[in-house]
Length: 377
Ligand SMILES: *Cc1c(COP(=O)(O)O)cnc(C)c1O
Image (cartoon, rainbow, N blue to C red; front, side, top):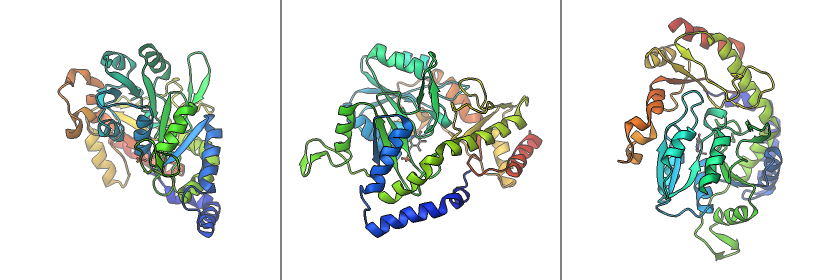
């Protein structure tokens, strides 16, 4: 699904040198590499504060702690996503409220969000799924109308740009009150272990969160709030500093692969291609609305599982993201959910299949993958 070894070849010397420097100076925790990466990522995103932490799940949890959400508060998020999002909501004693998604973009459906709002609702967590932004115009409007926090789960869309209806643009993760991202190795900006970060433009929130990630300390050995220990280590920061200047190129290589997939599959009646929000289908060469964390097809002839088995036989990796709606997971089932409220997610889990997507895909690989799929279909 990804080729991290191939990608490393290109940056081997630079990465090795930076890691060696961390070893030589023994600045393992909060060293200059962490400070440097934080500043460079702030500049890249155009956001006032980046607070590095240990992983993307922590980033989500800490963002919610920073907003002062309390047990019993309801937090709305998507039914069709990775479990981390709902996990931290539940872990903090908040009440997760799962809602359905849009069948074309796979992102949270604003109409479903509106329907789920109650007097207890305090926040919405849109996930920018598979590499493109959730419908932020509508979500920001809803959040403002109801006085809700908007927490972006940006683990899959770092580097993507959202174009608002008035034509203005912002990077994914800089539009809500706070955002969380992950540097898990297979993410678009991945390190060589675990890593994550929180973004915000709010100075007070940033200060509060910087204490939370460090045991609730704002002054050494004064613990003002209950915090956590969540740090990005210096070696991972060194890797990320080498990769950040290449992020746009990495995203463009993913888009190139997506365009080739699209060209091969377009017009096939049994397949639904991933849709980009501005309808360019990733074909226009300047579009940065989609960074293709995943390239996800829908197989509409009922043969998704048979295709998956066929791909396995042919040695082609694939992913089923996601096979089970979150509202059907044992840990998150709730009597408040009615099946009729999740027609899209219930359908998508039977149809989706994600193909190999990374920066090192070559034409021969893409042609083997697309030919194998088309022959099977
Ligand atoms: C990867 C991911 C996370 C969690 O990130 P980790 O760094 O693995 O903790 C959270 N949300 C989404 C949508 C993700 O894809």
